[in-house]
Image 1: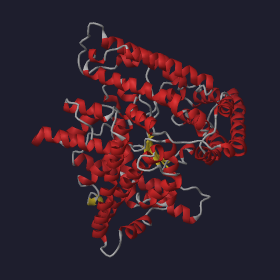
Image 2: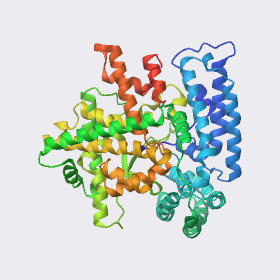
Image 3: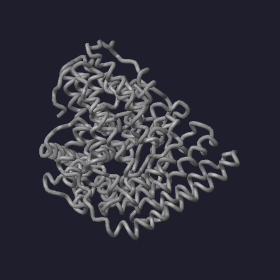
Image 4: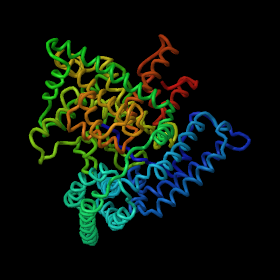
Length: 591
């Protein structure tokens, strides 16, 4: 479950128009002014130049006809530009900035360094074939997904992008050097859905277009994309896969740097791994306690097996999530959990094809600068029609009556969707677009536990009976154990700290220690080979719980949960370390 939010970045005019909560006191060297200027240059002249698809997703539609330059030369140009910008930022003395710009400065500098780490060290552009096939598919999806302009306008933009896709896939063949075998397998697993997307979904999305010439041009460009993807699939199967023997592992040094740049967390890896194991064992013990209350004669594994059978039919799954919204909203408002800025609810739909191999559920809101379409999509991955009855049943175990509640809370109320609704109130453009996953995913995962701790899921508040309430708690704990397993598996697969995990060992860990069905374990392990830092769910939750405890200690009897949550929201998508300093006015450790 995740928040599908693209790295959406603003134009200079937007940034300069964003109000500051405090008056600026310019230092002698004009530090705040210099930082504002550089930020604008970065956003306007650098990032969308290299990521136009993200510009579209952000709601900046002047980028709609452009496609990423996937060539090796394009990557090197981006590296040069980022290094040059990093040097300019390093000339600013952050102590000369006011409090919020100083924090934003560190967020921006870390973002630049994180991108450079990905391009120069991780080098996904040389290792991950799915980065190309899913990337170009997504470039069209973000145009067709929302009716931000007339269908004819959007069709013309899609045609412009489609014309560039065959060349992008040629660059892929030139760039890919000895990928990890699992990466090639994932790309091949998703490529048929990518082809089907262009064969069926894209023509359907633009079926109401009226421009005759655009229809003719689209028929040509779309056919060329389909042919290019089929050719790319054949090449991957016969050429790339047999020679894909690379290593997906980050290594301890790269893993630590990525964690520091992306999340502002610099905890030693051995201690970090122990934190993950401690939370895993705590949740396993709580699972056993709740299971014993339900039926003292059954083991936790037997109770889990029974819970796995309590799921809706696949064709009823979207409605099962939709049915949760009203009770969640009512509970949040009557129990003063958090302010919900809008009454508009998200739209349930099936997960886009290029995300299905590694994603069970996600929230896809409009970009922060989208003005013509405000719909947010709650995506759910349904079982494939071609699956056996056994595989479908095992997969649906992840959507049992308990995990449906925790997933709905995570993705919608008061998780990702509510945080998205707060975006207009974030204090700066940087806080709207350069997000920390320990904040975004940590918040949503924290909400799963917090809502039940506050009484949601009890009889009369989201549950019909005491037994149903206990099963809902088991579902929440199963989801918590899934995130704990990600925490441990990510570190052990990528760094070797605690003993290196192979892919089969990681899958077994998800099953035995994370209490997941085998198909889910396979999906989660695949995801972790590329999403190395997917410990950010549990890590962020623990950071937020500690922050709440520390604020409560500071405020004593004056502490108010809704005020705490609202104050957290107002800080935007910043790392929890930044939010701690803003709310506690000190540099105390995040954990």
